[in-house]
Length: 235
Image (cartoon, helix red, strand yellow):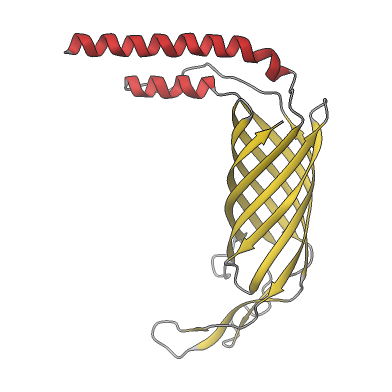
């Protein structure tokens, strides 16, 4: 049985190596030319505020977006779309449109096998990662949007004490932020799995904290993180 298992493992490894070589040889020229100029994607993620002071309240929402990008032959392009942020305190609807300049790197394949390989499964996993072409995209620009406020504060209590009103309020319906981000894409032909972190600096002072106790009154978070994962299609 052990002999059969070893033979099967060697057979699987041989098939993967042949497939890797053939796939790389056929696709390399196409990828280097960056044949596909259009990119559409659906993404889901989080939208938390960023602060270095642990005593400051945090604002957190969920984000879903549909995005469209066009790239010229020099790999410079633009990206836009529509984002919806939900479950964000003080809002009953938050929509924004990105207007981003973008630059994407050449498609790369990395067949270096490093680190600790403790099993046959680890080896297969690294070979598969090397087989998948990948590239990075850098973008910078603005997000402009509209917020439908929900300024009905809830009641909170600390350590069994009395209840009082506390939370974030929307002070400005119109939203503008300056954004910079990165999109990392693992491609499978025209499809891709995208991981996209970016930071937003809010220019319009949209959110303000209020507490009947007076703690942190007037605090307005300026920095936010957009972290999404999604599926893309290029054509």
